[in-house]
Structure formats: structure tokens, C-alpha cells
Image (cartoon, rainbow, N blue to C red; front, side, top):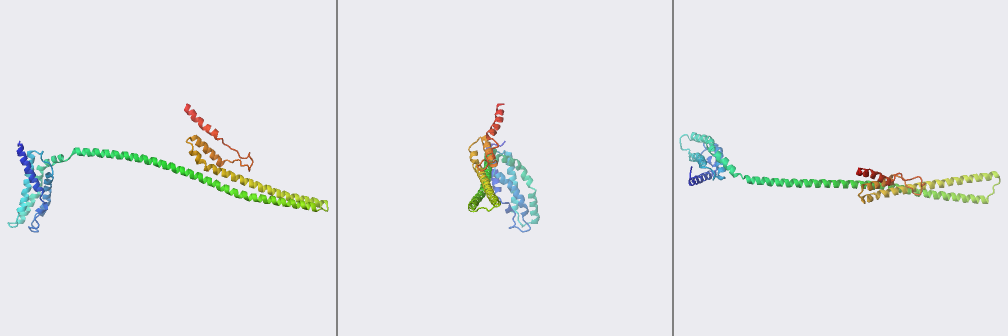
Length: 342
């Protein structure tokens, strides 16, 4: 067992040897410029690079925990590499058969890797474990895990918010679509009401015209009756019959025009009522959160849109409400109450 001082001396020697070899550029050992194109050590450069790379790796590591035997092994490998470098640097062309000598040195360098590497395996492996900061790796792994967990939580929150926003957007789109549908249907009824209003105006004009013509005909007949005396009974009967036919026809025209006027006004009023019911439907629905009340409002709006209403222009017995919303609400409430009691 070597004493501590001896071990320190050998450690310093090894460090100096490794530092010296690490500073050497393997390409400078080719000597292509100062020898000849045919005789040089260009083929030995890759092998020098492999061996010098081992020295560079060890030079960057902490060798203080290696044993004396391991330090001696490293020192022996460094000496072997230096001996080959020395042969290359001291080689000259001024000797017998320089090409053969050069090739012999290259063959020695090519086969030297195993002898140099074997003593360095254990120091390389041991110093590699010492150079690795496992505590730092563990800390970084924990940090990455915490970061990934935080990012996963953020992603989950983002997905939940996105899902909620998508649901809200879908609900808004449905609501807008419902409002658009209600508004469109209301406009249809309003357009129909306008058409019936125009027709009602025309029939009113026709009724007034028929009444005026009938009044004129009656006045003419009265004047003729006062100023003209029929010569015979047959002429008198003929005059009376003709007068009755004319007045009956004109009266029927008045009745027919007035009837169509009332029908058009009835349709105009009904369609206006339907349009008003649809346009106010959303306001009533949004004013309550009770689904049963919303169903009753929907039922009432449906009745307003699809069921006839008394307008005063038609017979009161003709249009009547066919569904009672109060009965409908009670009918929907009773099963829920029964289920709750059960």
C-alpha cells in the first residue's frame, strides 16, 4: 500500500501526463508537409485520435479517488502513447529503407489501441459514475415531473373551460336559431296580414261601390214610379219584376262584397295576433325558470299560431280554444308529485 504522499505524487504525474497528451493535435502527427507524399504517418492519425480522445476524457474528470494501481495503469498507457508519438516525431527520411520503417511504426500504432485501452477501462468507468450527478438528475426529474403535472392540470382546466365555452356557444347558437325561427315565422304572419289587409280594403271599396249603385238604382226606380203610370196591368207587373230583379242582384252584390271584406279583415286580425304572440314569446319564456311555465307558454303560443281566434268579423261560435293550458300544467304536475310521494 502506497502512503498518501506517494499517491499524491503519482496523481500529479498522471494529471500532467494526461494534460500534455490532451493538448496534442492528432492531425499534426501526420507529418505530410515535412516528409514526403508517399512516406508519412497520415494513416496513423485516426488511431492517434482514438487514443488521445481517451486521454482527453480522463483529463476532464476527477482522478483523486482512484487507487495507486489505477493511477499507475493510466501512467503506463500515457507512456505507451508518448513512445509512439516520439517515434513519429523522431522519424527521418535519412536512413535505410525509410518507407519500410514508416510502415512498421504505423502497424505498431494500429495494434496499440487494445494495450492502451485495457488499463484505462476501469478508471474511465469509475470516473464516469463520479462525473454523473445523480442527485441533480433526480432533482431535475422531480422538477420535470412537477412541471408536467402543472401543465397537465392547466391543460385539464383549459379543456374544461373550452368544453364549457363550447356548450355556452352551442346554447347561444340554439337560442339565436330559435329567436330567428320565431322572428321568421312572425314575419310570415305579418306578411299574410298585410296581404289580407290590402284585399279587405279592395272589398270595402267594392262594397261601398255596390251600395252606391244600389242606392242610385233605388232612387231611379222611385223617380220612375212617381212620374210614370203604366198603361196596363201587365206593364206594371213587368216593371215591378224587373225592378225587384235589379235591386235583388245589387243587394246580393253588397252582401257578397261585405262578406268578403269581413273574411279578409278576420284573416288580417288573426295573422296579426299570431305574429304578436310569436314576437312576444321569447320575452315571456326568458322571464321564468320553471319548465312547466315555459311549457304552458309554448302551448299558448302554439295555440295563438295554429288555432283560430274570435275577431268580431266572424261568428263567435266558429273559433274556440281547443286546449286548456291550466289543465295541461296540472296534467304535467300530477305525475311528478306522485313520483315524489312514492
